[in-house]
Image 1 (cartoon, protein in one colour):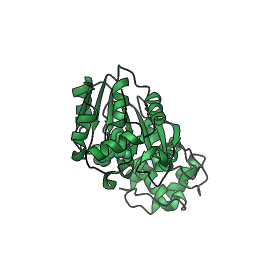
Image 2 (cartoon, rainbow, N blue to C red):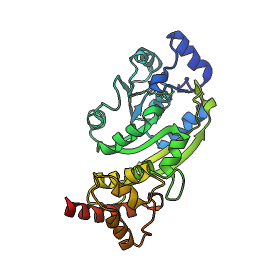
Image 3 (cartoon, helix red, strand yellow):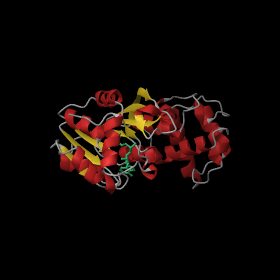
Image 4 (cartoon, rainbow, N blue to C red):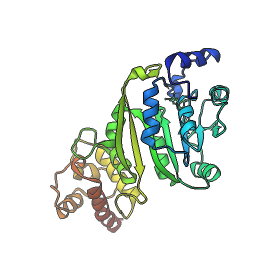
Amino acid sequence: MAYLGNSARTKEVLAKYNMSAKKKFGQNFLIDGNVLENIVEAAGVTDDDCVLEIGPGIGTLTQYLAEAAGRVVAVEIDKGLIPVLADTLSEYNNVTVINEDVLKVDIAAIADEYNGGRPMKVVANLPYYITTPIIMKLFESGAPIESITVMVQKEVADRMTEGPGSKDYGSLSLAVGFYAKAEPVCDVPPSSFIPQPNVGSAVVRLSKYDEPKVSVGDAGFMFEIIRTAFNQRRKTLSNALSNNPSIGVSRQQVQDALTKMGINDKARGEILTLEQFAGLSDILQRDSAMIN
Ligand code: SAM
């Protein structure tokens, strides 16, 4: 039985191994059984699934996952936690712990080895200091992944799920929206963790599309446009994009492209949808190719 989802048992395990949470690894251990159950339910984990957990910590969420899934592969960077995990997961024979940095590990190879190359579900209480690199790696590596259900900082959850016009809309919303349908699951207060983080948290579910949401000639070029647009959020698109030599277009070309698309030529990036960024990217890529 999963027994770690409370403060007393978590403190007991940490004391037994004379450990405390390491800030540099973003360690905030979940102690709220309801939240843990919500995460597993939102991820829709069944015994047909192979789950990839990132950062098992002392094994709290891992216990819940091991009871619901066919197999769990958990990647933990902190080697000090490996003996703890061997202890807290000893009664489960369907869990494999890999002591690696998730940003360096070959996720497709994990899917091959533990799930016959079939898509895995990623479920995690993420280390907040590297949330975006982890999410982008999961998408961009092309590894077989069906969905990503993760605890992140509340502000990051908002950025993943908001649309054009919102203050939280930006490159992360567009990058996530390109690859997946993003849905908020629940908000989680600091009191659900030991130690308490100094920010609010939220669980989001990202259900990956079979194909990216929009078709675009060069997705890398589109994301360069998107990054440039939101790095200089207060500028018009034509000013922001013409200032970036790696895009290689003039202010007039951006204005003409926007007009052609029926968008105000003084628009800022924050009002464009993903489809509109894809259209703009295709036009500017042709213009840029003509200059270079
Ligand atoms: N899953 C546990 C829980 O819910 O109580 C711990 C979550 S804690 C927020 C984040 C975990 O990610 C920690 O165990 C930390 O050591 C681990 N971690 C941090 N950076 C990592 C990385 N680059 N690769 C793998 N694990 C990492």
